[in-house]
Image 1: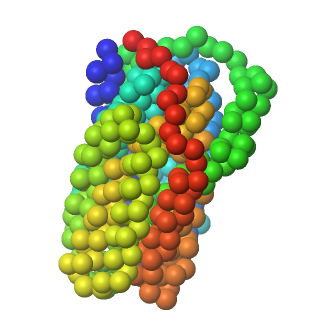
Image 2: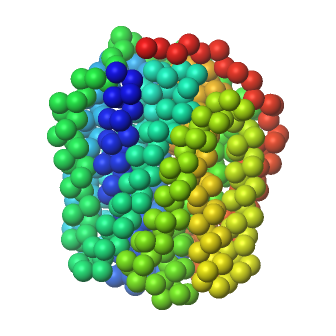
Amino acid sequence: MRSGLLVLFSLGHCANDFAPVGMYLLIPAFGVAMGLSPSEVGLLFTIHAFGSALIFVPAGVLTDHVANRGILLVATFFWVGIGYLGASFADSYWTFAILIAVAGMGDAAWHPIATGVLAQVYGKRRAYALGVHAVGGHMAEVLALIVAGFLLSVVDWRTATQIMVVPGLIMGVVFLFAARIVPRLEAVRPTRADFTDVWQIWSSRSGIRVIGLFTFYNMALFAIMSMTPLYLQDVFSYSWRETAIALALMMVFGALAQPAMGKLSDRIGRRTITVSGNIVAALAALGAWWFPGLVPSLLCLGIALTILVAIRAVLLAAAVDHAGRREGTSLGLAFAFMDGLGASAAVLAGIVGEIDLALAFLLAAGFSVMAVVLALAGHRDRPVPVLETS
């Protein structure tokens, strides 16, 4: 049953992320059509992610207390599809911003629910399971970017957005029948003690350090992802199709490496992988700023994105390790800080991009360095006493 659950969740992750990932190109395309500045485009990325951040924790709490998690997962597909479909008809900056934020909430809800279930089912192999689940999402990044780039080369951003929601809606129908294999819980009403316990875990000195680590890690990722499309088009005159292919190639190897990185961290510890990954990403991002040529830029950005994507599941597993229980709630918090506070980097990258778009990569290097500092400040990895369920 567990292998079937992994396959189902990975495919579901891919479909649910398809339209949201397309926003990496569709938001800049909207910006070009509206004549927006880099900072205005960066703000759209931040608003999109901030909307997602609002739902992560509630969705995580539901994962730990609702019996039928399968029906919750079904609802996320239709939330995403209807939300982005509405955004495709927006005719102003703020209408578009609000609608993509609301649509992003649906995709955001999927993540703590699905990963919470997997963390409960797989116990001590949770980083491996989260890595396999993440492959679906990052394969969506590869496929969705290529599809979005192709669509933008032949149709406008509105039509492209409308087409991008189709895979998620189809998978929503599939999940109506397949969701029965999602393990059920005995429904338990959340209590004040539950929230007090979670607050104590994450408001401690070590909890705040872990939150800071998540935030700076994702700020590096957001700074690179939000400005790279504009950088390739503005500096090297890339088309939408060429930009999409470049981004997809930069991320595909990181996506494929996530299960291996997760399995390795299950054996040798999270901190070693987190520190070494962020050091390599910082050096690569610094190289993208220092060497302005096309080949060095693509190579350095590719290395930075590959590494940052590859270690994502390791950081998520570290969130559950820190909490030791309430997997859904802990992952909801991790996603909220990663994609909520972390998304502020898109605005900051856009602001420095007003001076020079390459400065966004220097900024990303700084964020990765901060993540390294916080990772080194913690205690060495200690095994968490969890039992693997069947």
